[in-house]
Length: 317
Image (cartoon, rainbow, N blue to C red; front, side, top):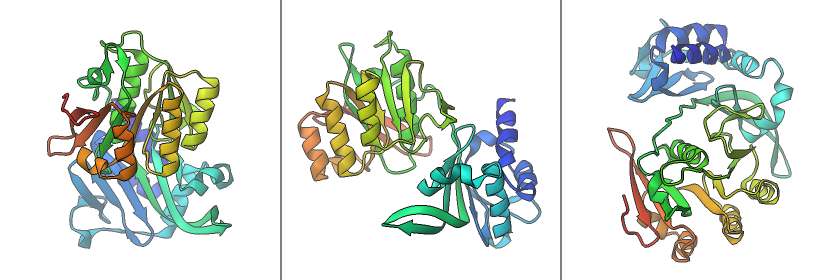
């Protein structure tokens, strides 16, 4: 029943024609992960069991030869629904390349960019949409959350995996567990969350659409270094959580957290702990003991599997 209601609300973002098609072909909304719309190209649905294309008869197929072509007018109409007929109101988000809608779903946008001084000022002729559906998996961290604590104290943790393996999903549930409290930390902690890409809490009009815990304060759509500074200055967090540490600027921001006696929970892209150690800057941070726990997400046919290591590379879980 809940999935049916979510589906009904979600499908309102599409053009009238695509809305009818979506309703006809998506029977299991919970298994839908991503939808891609490209002008003069097929509409692609990515489910947990693979990709499928929309046909003219409003059916799904796996052979692209039978796929229906999506016209630019469909994308334009869809953007009108997404923006409530006010593209201007979403101008700042569109400049960043994505829009977050009710339910926490994130819509990536591509088209012709208008640049000035190497900065995007506007995106015109939007011709590509990547709609990533927000699916919480509450409880996915329950069996490993205890590994992140030692004598009741949180240990700085980095979550790593290749793209698309569920780092953000795991991070979100860890934030919930740490904030609300868990068997090894029943009182919970004050958590500050910098959600730079609006994917973790998935705020809509400032309100988290996902469950991130009752002791969690969120800076939404805020650069990591700025959000971290604001949290430390005004919200007195015990732990700060951020997604996708990638640049030198991000790493410097993380060092700032540790220098203030605050815990850090973060993610980064790496195929394994060994691969992470081969990156010079990360090798330094790990050897300095900045991160005392590493959670590696392994993909597989049965879903993600988690391995937990200490800063010396010794397996804990």
